[in-house]
Image 1: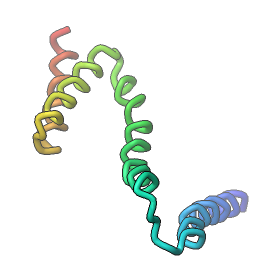
Image 2: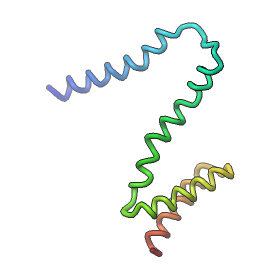
Image 3: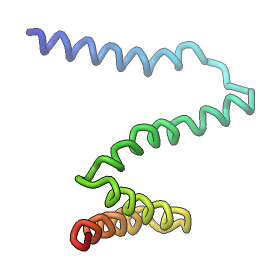
Length: 99
């Protein structure tokens, strides 16, 4: 019974968070500063959630850092997401095998 109540509370909170901005901000946002800020929020949140897990995803942080370095370099040169992911996984694997 407590699990069902917990799920209902979490669903309500999630729904409230998503509906609140829609109900409060009904007019278009004209401020260029606020619009540009809101444009970059998803990327910042994704980076903040992902970055710590990258460094602790393997037994050794150095191996994870090498994979992250490969991903950053390939991402800088605008390679495809599939290539970036596969190359970073291969880099981490090679670090684990060779070091």
